[in-house]
Length: 174
Length: 66
Image 1 (tube, one colour):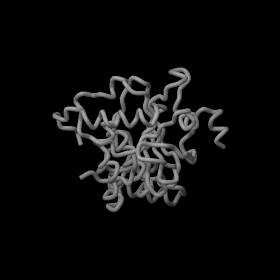
Image 2: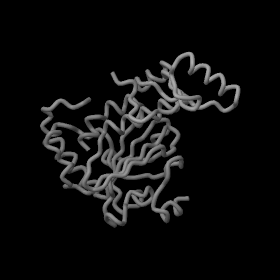
Image 3: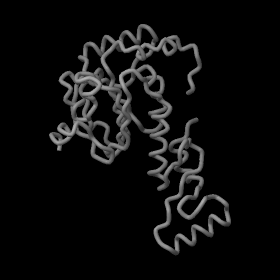
Image 4: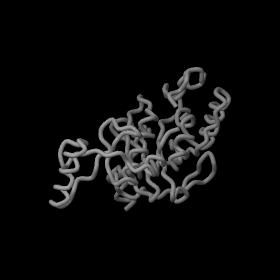
């Protein structure tokens, strides 16, 4: 929670809001928020849902019966600006999340949406993206020639490009 | 749709996020409130799991990677 709170400005830059959930009561969340504030000076800047009867947790599959029938596991749902679930991450009870990866995933999704491309393994903002493969034979030949001239890919189905600057600007860290 | 999701016990990527309205630490919140914004919805176990009180985070001495 504190880690999310500290990263909140970075999420905001990506037009992204944070929303926590647990099956504790609202007053327990308020007491916890206050504990965090007293101990660290940090005010959790995002809401935490009190899902007392677990109805949202069950709807989203946040409870893993094999781990615990009453506890939510650590889930992350990345939902886009149109309300579509784009990524689901599931962690066990005893492993905390790695916030930079959550930020990186949002950057990769927003980059893919903006640039109509995809991102390779270990991609970070600023690095080249994978060009969508051609869909017709003339386009395939064109792509192959382009790769031969620019030496920027393995084959017509795997080539790289620098994303459009406007796409990079949207997701760029400082 | 919601019933089906509950029976399946999970939702899948590419689906519409199931609607909800809930009480939160900042008042009532609905999924609809986030239209036009990206949303990270994350669940947390009950309190007092060890990773929650990461002392390094509390002390704020070490430079975070951000």
